[in-house]
Image (cartoon, rainbow, N blue to C red; front, side, top):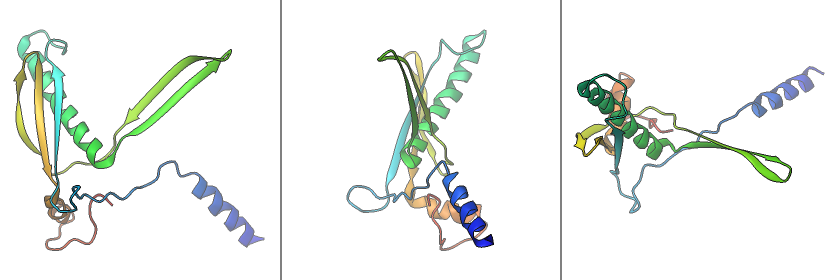
Length: 151
């Protein structure tokens, strides 16, 4: 009887998992490392909150940087998309879409940033060959690292 309870509990707990972990291999299409990822972020200056142009510019700088990091995280981890459609009387009455990116980005380098027309732009670059070294530094070890950060 006890064994049956444990089996039932383990089945229920494995059914509660909502996300799956995927292992990504950071190789370029030719199969050769290193792969350099690039991402660009944009933010309009005039629509930012703030009383003066300088404050709006500072807000746009931060927003474009965050947008660039989001684009870089999308390339590394992918994007979780959730869609919902409600149907009423054989017609779609409501559509909703949520998108989410979740991950840690280390080692990105800011390549360029500046005003481009009415937008502030930021361009980031990430050389994937440095990732094992960054993992070793964050764990307080040096030399070869057994586990890659994207596992």
